[in-house]
Image (cartoon, rainbow, N blue to C red; front, side, top):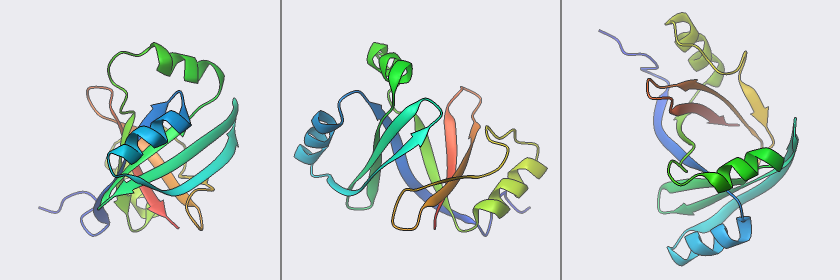
Amino acid sequence: MTQLLDENFQGLQHLGVPVTDLECSKHFYGRLGFRPVMEKSFEDDEGPVTAVMVKRGSMVIELYLQPGERRAEVARRRDGHIDHVAFSVRDIDAAFAELRAAGFETQQQAPVELPLWENGCKYFSIRGPGGETLEFNQIL
C-alpha cells in the first residue's frame, strides 16, 4: 500500500510560534543556542508581518510577529503557542494536488507564495482532527 506523499515528503521543516515581542523572543531563543538564519517582512491583508527563522542544529523555529488583533489574541493565550508544524516537500503543487485528491480539505485554494528565504517559499495547510495546523512547505 502506498502512502500519501510517498516520494515527496522530506520531514519536519519548522515549528511556527507567533510572538508578541520579536526582539525579546530572538534574545530568548538565542540564549538557548538558536541563531537567526532568515528575517523578512511582508504585507498581508491586515498589515505587516515579520518572520524570523532561528536554527540550532537541524531544528528550525519560525518566530513571527503579526499585526493588530491577531497579535493581541496571541498575547491573551496561556497555552498552545505553537501555531503550526511545517513539513518539507519536494514539489508543493504535487503535494497540494495529491492531498486534495485524497479528500483532505486545504485551508488555501492553492499554494501561497511568500517572500521568505532567499528565493521565496510556497505553502498550504490542512487541519488535523484536534484543530492543529499542518503546513506543507517548499523552499524555492
